[in-house]
Length: 251
Image 1: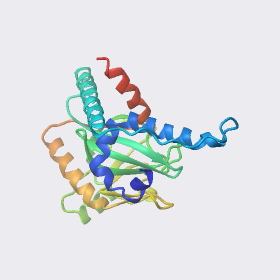
Image 2 (image 1 turned 90 degrees about the vertical axis):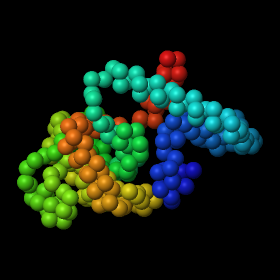
Image 3 (image 1 turned 45 degrees about the horizontal axis):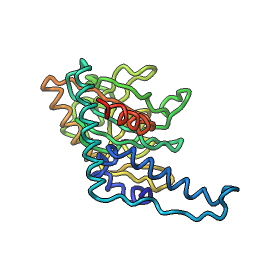
Image 4 (image 1 turned 180 degrees about the vertical axis):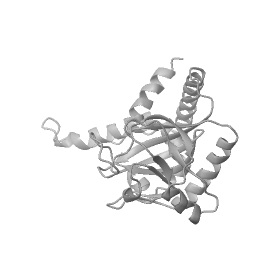
């Protein structure tokens, strides 16, 4: 499965939401495989052969997915009732960081929208080489005629001002914009319709197409008076989701 996602990242477009809902099962599945692989190398079990993982019927999988969807819906309703925010949420789930580049997935209103690329995590910030901290931030137009703004206007007739992620501790002028690799970010979030995670240097593809679609959608919402926020989660979001599934099953 890992090789499939690396060599065919477009598959994530269709099944990523299912994988999120089924993350707990997937984690347990791979933990079982790891234990079986390492078992023959232990001192006590050198002669033990690998065993096949238990088969799961299609109906069982469907039931599990249906139950998890109900849990996630309960979670979203409860969080919405406890939140004072009334607007559109952009979620970015970071899932990979190789020490140079961070890859992620962007969702708008809980629907997959694009791939993301950022700089790597740094314990101590290195200017223009560090991704922003996970958290919730507002997104607004930065209505200033900067050199970068003028460059985008010249190139794209649909562009007006940059979309800025606001109120980030120790960061300023962080945008969501076009780019293909870590050299294009400078701490900003790049978005695209494709990702190349199999190469030594991780890159994203078809960025202009994704950004135009993103820009026009967010611009229309802002002009209509909608508030926009971006919620960024680090790579350990899978662990927290697994805990949430257990917690919300009891509600």
